[in-house]
Length: 367
Image (tube, rainbow, N blue to C red):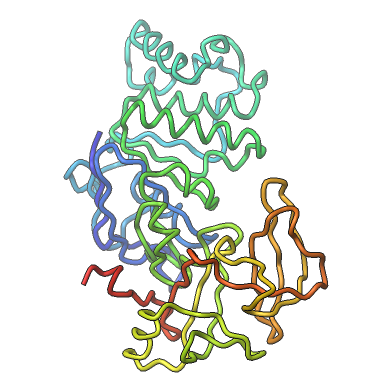
């Protein structure tokens, strides 16, 4: 096991004038499970490949266990990689696939068999050790790929979207197995995904990247409740947070049709002190409710009934899209006009309209 440190680590691909990873700073604790998440082209896979030695670090440094590994060949970094495609040898059995890396390292046959059996037991693969990959399901093949990494007993696991090729049910099952396995093994793990559900449910902390730059590095709970900027606010959470830039009134913010969304008194004071005429607000769908007594008037566009919960997609008179969560029996019909208001316990997030950065209230900053 080992700590991992990215210090101003950057990478640029040949022929490009834009950094794929731009001055990345991360401090990953020993035994921690960290997820790198972001949209396509955000630099998350490049950052992982820089750690694994598969991409050059053009500036800055990366340390594993306190040792700078920028000039260290990939094979000498004591890491194990699990890829999106299983990369199994079709002519080898499960046991042979799992032990092949050890064989290349000239580990004795008895030691290889012992380590393969132990990993197979962890992964519920014992009964499949004599099968070829063609006789396995997608989830089983991915577990074999993980087993091949586990028998190496590395300092660091690098996982590059390992669940992307699985169907929805298998993704949930394998996601749980990977997270549970990492907890038992205690190996420092860096996991790349574009799936925010994986990011929110698997990692101890999650790094959100955009255009090669780190946006926020925090626990899933903090990402959800205190997003650092508008991008994180809109990217984390499904359905996405409602975000709009609106003029400030004495009581809150005003939509184009004249309806008002009320803000807390300390938020209004903060906005007044900042001298802002308008502000970008964000509010989660579950923190809005349908209430005929007041709030923002909207026209319902779509009702998404998921069984346990219902999401109402609508737009205000000024065209601002809004999403609210509703109880199944109370959901309105499309084209109906309803009113949305913030639930009593709901939170409205404030962002600087020019930079998109979070405006922090005194209660949050601890001052």
